[in-house]
Length: 294
Image 1 (tube, rainbow, N blue to C red):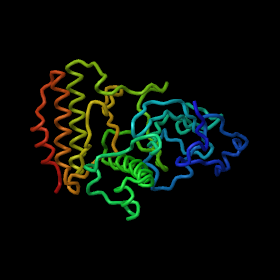
Image 2: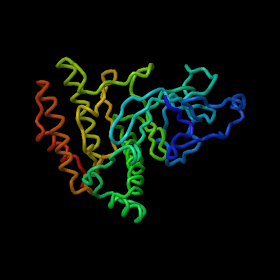
Image 3: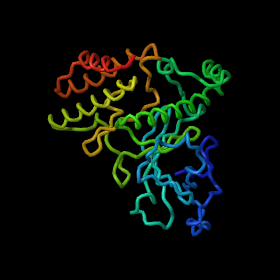
Image 4: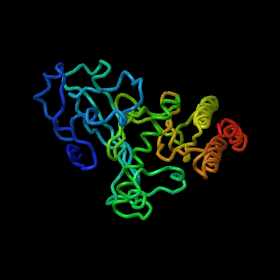
C-alpha cells in the first residue's frame, strides 16, 4: 500500500501539529508508512461538519490518520478506509479513535472525470475564470471540476445531515478529499448495497419505507438525489444510509430537477417491483412534488 504522507499535492498535509498542553506526551511521535497527521486542525470551520458533532468524532491535533485500504474504486473517485486515532490513548473512549471513509476525487491524469451538465444547471461558480475553464474542459478546468465536486458532496452531506436525512456524517473536506462517517462494522467491513441484500418481504417493506422517508425529507427541503438507485443505498443494521451525493439538485433552480426526481422514483420503484413489492412511481412522484415548497 502506498504512503499517504504528502503523497498527493491536492490532499491536505499537516506535518507540524498544534498540540494542546494535554497532547505534549505525543510530540515525539511521527507518522509512519501509510500515515499522516490528522488533517482536522488544518481545516477551516466552513470545511467541517455541522454541529452538534457526534461524540465519536476525533478532533485532537495529536491524532494520526492511517490508511487501511481501498473500500471502492470508481471512475471519478476512490473510497479509502481511514483510522483516525490518538496514539497511546484508550481507543474504547469516544473521541480517541474512529474509522472514517475518505472519498478522493481522481485527477485528470488518471480519469476521464466528467459529470453531466444536467446536475450542475442552476449552480454558480464563484470565479468566472474557473467557470470558463470547466466549460471548455481544459486541464485546469478538470482540476477545478474535481474540487468542485468534492465540495458539492460535502455541502450536500452537511445540508442533509441538518435536515435529518439518513446520510453519512460529513467530517471535513479539503482539496479533493471528503472525509465522512464510515458505514460498516468495527472491523472495517463496509455495509452492503441494497442491490446485494437478500431480505424477507417484511424487511423489504421496511427498507422501502425508509427510502421513501428519505425522499420525503429531500423533497420538503426542495431537493432530489438525482441518481438514486439500489447501488448507492447502503443497508447497515437494518437501516438505509444514502451515499454518493455530489449531484444532489435543487428542484427549483435546476430546470431538470423534476425530471431527475421522477427518474429517482422510477429507479426505486422498478427495483422494488422486481422484488415483488408493489410500488407506483407516478404515485410516489406525485407525493413528492406536493411536498416541494415553490
